[in-house]
Length: 339
Ligand code: DAU
Image (cartoon, rainbow, N blue to C red):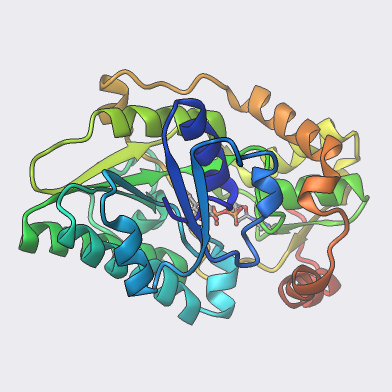
């Protein structure tokens, strides 16, 4: 697999090892990778870590040889960063996938499962939910790169006649997520009594899925991979769609901090109002989320409270510079709180 030192990837590595898989983890160790996420894994486990780039064709080609499953979790994932620096998203999220596709087509025994996102559909007006065949309508450089990657998977599987699975997932949250993302950012800033920069009116809706429920979905998907050539899309959504302000207030309550920390700031450019997946396909195969948001968010806030050593404590280095670039001016000029 690729990207196993990231948030979702590290949960996947642990779960695969627990299920008896032999895992090779290719990870470039970018800012978003955290080797501490896999502390304690190996050396006795059937686990091999390879530091390297998903765009390195000869490295990837050699690793895929003899594999029966390739899971792609390597990606640049943060929408805000894609607005600051889109080029790296095209490289890792599109070129990296092409590199994997080249390796997989040369190794017909290797099944490809690629991690995509509900963001490829752009913003959906209620009560719309995106079906597997809903047309793409991305609105950020990040989501456009993920849509482009999916088109490459579609083209390769059509042209060369092999099967591949694309997982489109809603917002996953839980332990070990990088602090740049909404829930860990607001949680750790709330602990520190710092303002919580809520974009725009805070009424944007995201569909939140606890990471253990994603992992359970992945195991089912991997256990029931289709053999027919072409791309097979699977939607993984919790159905729990909440406005950002509600999530921010829940975090404040769990962190025992006042909601006055919530600071409305200038909106994210092109900010999608709402994502919603129709996940009936996977549910009909036996999957359902087991952890409701109220429980998952409590577990998550408590994990961050107890594990500063893992997530790194106060922001320093690259992350501190990013926070200044992303929020410095926004927090200096706050938005108007909604009535
Ligand atoms: O929907 C799946 C996607 O979820 C994944 O494909 C992405 O890789 C992942 O980053 C996530 O994208 P979002 O943009 O939805 O996640 P983020 O945590 O950045 O933001 C969640 C919501 O919170 C979004 O509406 C923007 C808002 N937000 C976020 C940040 C970081 C704020 O209001 N303030 C913030 O400072």
